[in-house]
Image (cartoon, rainbow, N blue to C red; front, side, top):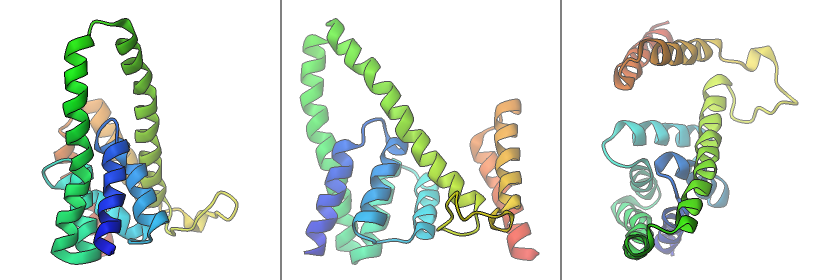
Length: 190
């Protein structure tokens, strides 16, 4: 039964994950945290970190990780298959119609209309991750927040990372490694 739930959850994620892995993060968050309570918010943040650091699409890495966490190797296989099945079917169908009707203005209008929706999904996922990094507790709301709940070290690390990325156009991998080393020193040694 759990394997069927895993398959169906990741099938839905794969079906509605328009715009890539970052756009799928709110969908993954809903299925994994809210609908099934398979992970905690902290484990979900760790999942995102691992999914981004390992090669391959984020949604696929996340599905494999969650499947392993919930039901071991069979869960990983079922979650991965569930995540990729809708994409394979949809891409085959859409590629046929796209090549047949790609010059129609209505098709171009649909594609332009989807872009803002994808940006909003990515922004939502980014905001969730930022809130988790900035606040020390998972259950902080705007109404019960105080200065002691804010993780100022994380704010400084995020700010410096964004500044270096934007100002000096550094390789994001190098920035991640550098902030990881600083984080190990600050949180592990001190």
